[in-house]
Length: 335
Image 1 (cartoon, rainbow, N blue to C red):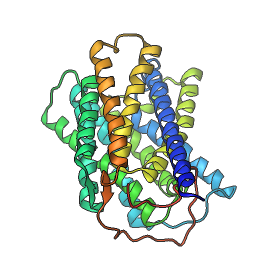
Image 2 (image 1 turned 120 degrees about the vertical axis):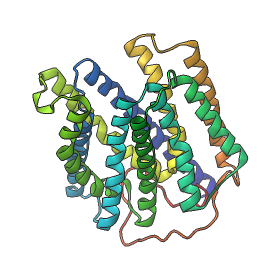
Image 3 (image 1 turned 180 degrees about the horizontal axis):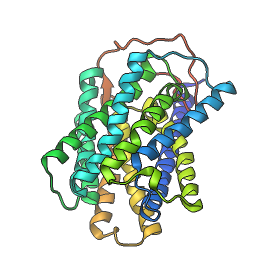
Image 4 (image 1 turned 90 degrees about the vertical axis):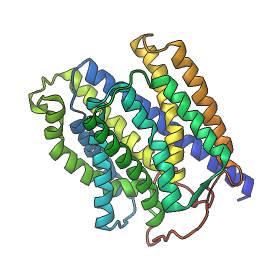
């Protein structure tokens, strides 16, 4: 295959992976907002456990039908990943409960510099000046869009720190495990989803009770709310898979930067579905700044020296085949 054709194919698959993630992520946010606001199903941790249970069923079906090849992931690596991922889920829920919306958004924005630090320390990534400046413009734009009142207390600050670091570690670890053990997105989900489902369904009702003071078993289930829960679980399959695909193809930092495009989409979709309250001149200005920053980041990070690895020391285990939708053809030295 000619280099230009290979590059074009990779660009097309990157775009498809990203749009898959955007549509599923925005879709699940809209469905969950309706489920929690309209039908008062406020049990976010338990709902996430149901998401992973549904994803586990999907991986079992794919394994049975031969789409997922046998693979190995050492138990210590699996447990570390699940620990980071579960702390991320619970930390985000508690941070939202204990902090103002403004500080919660600032905490989410801080994931990008934390992810950058992890890449610099562990992967020896070097960023150009333009790449760093473009990230700052993205952060500025999203901050203008989303940050309103900012108040913080001690326990809220601790919850935010736990949420930010665990989320950044979990996203970094997705990329790390896929490269080190040559795992495709389906393979990695096949290993992690069952453990996450079991742990979150076991702990979720207790965590949700502490957060909401409500019991999930006492919720007034009806046909409509059950349909929305089922729809949320179905979309979550695509959301979980697309996250692993995107981080495997890009990096945790690129995933975070481009991820703020989802914030823009959510604001726009909220305008169409839930009214005009949130779409002010400040929000439109922030969107414009953020989109300019994302375009600059894409251009700056793709240039020679924009974002590259200084060493190639990561060992890989290649005893199993890659599998899964939209997987990379190879691990590029430039990321």
